[in-house]
Length: 127
Image 1 (cartoon, rainbow, N blue to C red):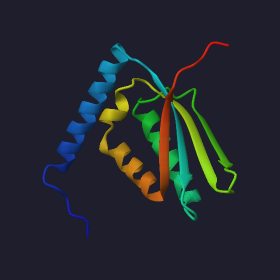
Image 2 (image 1 turned 60 degrees about the vertical axis):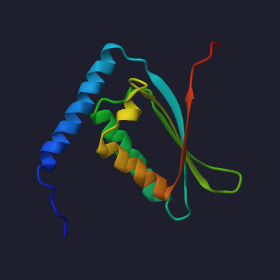
Image 3 (image 1 turned 90 degrees about the vertical axis):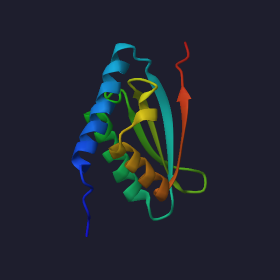
């Protein structure tokens, strides 16, 4: 049976408020950051990993934490035949991942249980 924490809703609202305030500050002096995230689900976790990736993206868009019109999500297989997901996305500001709310960090925790997750920050090159 789930137990509620006294004042839990107020705490959650405060944390979300702080996160949204940090987004507002970031928007004023935003330094967007593009990342390439690679997800390698453990065998049997491929469908669940994809579900969590999509759930995370929907939450990030709803929270206005990312540039929502330029992400790319790929699914493929490596040379060993293992499923790999690659997500290219841009944070509205480079500071956002460091102050993500529990809603997002809990999804990240779930991803790490389902497999391995790695990312690299990338910058565009001139052609």
